[in-house]
Image 1 (cartoon, helix red, strand yellow):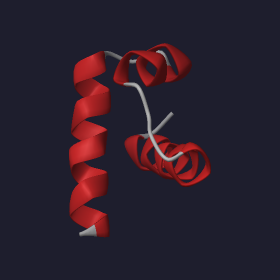
Image 2 (cartoon, rainbow, N blue to C red):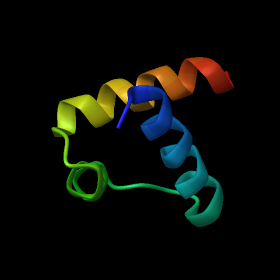
Image 3 (cartoon, rainbow, N blue to C red):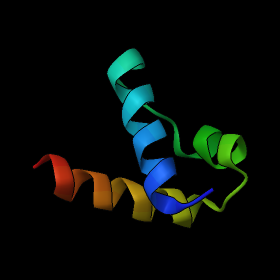
Length: 48
């Protein structure tokens, strides 16, 4: 899955649940926790 797709999915999860757990997202997308952190940083820059 491409980063942009992950970021959109993370955004959807945030909108639905209100929060996310990095370790859970890491397992869900089968990527490292560091990758999820980078995705969240990118998402933060897009939103704010």
